[in-house]
Image (cartoon, rainbow, N blue to C red; front, side):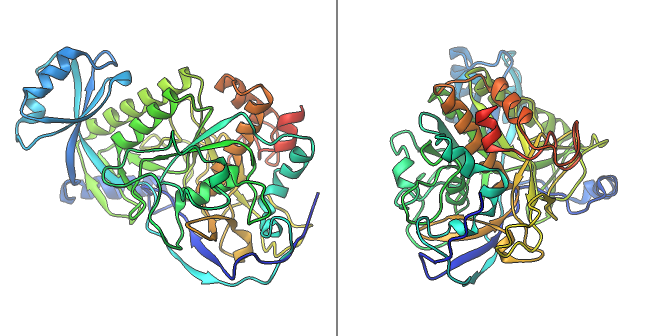
Length: 464
């Protein structure tokens, strides 16, 4: 069903290119790895403030807590379910001394890095569109995944919850407020509330949330699961897009403990196993290679905990236009971990309200590879037309953006439709299988290098 309604609700939308987290700066990963290895000794140490303590048994015992309290540091927070504590210490021998405890397997600097970059964009004023949901005419992504057909069949996501681990949400936005659970929303980024600051500007978490579950209220846009419950879990700064690894892990465990049906993580970090971190601005830092493995282990613990609690976990694949097949030097967090559904991005090519457009072109920036990508979804692109991007909610207004950040929430919305159809509870493995089995095989049968098992289809997901 193609509906073109062409009237604007606000005077302007904002254009923003949303890239993700830590990125490698070349499409040739082997060349990048060689360059980093050659320069590794010249790199600066990555900045950090605190330490992440990981226990051997995967739980935080009283013995460990007491040991840490008397070991020259201050416990800032704990994630007892997965055996992690965050400790502040100025003791130069803190790592060495703490590892003397046999219940502690790792002590890692809790690096704070960029998972999404600072906003980049310019204001644009597209021509007018129709009535009802005023920006519906721009939502080519909803047509691409057959969301209107799912809605017409009576599937709205009511009864399912999606926890958005991101940079906060605009709690007062008229398209988000109806579905937002403010009591469960929480911040794990120190000094920032989960409800973002006042003003009119692009906010990553709000944009993602609108694609998932913007309300049907004749105000702006509509989400894939427009009656699903949204919960904001702030793990990144709304100002910088940065956050510590422990923030992400704590947010995952919190969401699982609160009964999240779906976790959406439109964020990512690329880790080089030789001991190099590369931030979103392309700045490399040197850290001990063993820390990379320990960071991976800690986040996998959090993912596995949520998965076992019944939470479906969806993450963006990344925007570095890199093939992850056949390369063992790099790992993508969280998209490359077990029990995570990793999403690549599709886009039209010069859509401009043309209902016959091909919606399934791999986005020019999308990370790809059979070993990483599970599914594909509309993420938009910026190389031909602004209209090829994804329009959704921001702080106060509505904004264009493109990225695998925008693709993942389309899948999270469909996951909510599937779970709601199943009565509000469903094993995450079954959700993943349903998403895969009903995806459109736009890249051929089997696993496609760009599209995984295919581009998701909302209507098929709830009717087959």
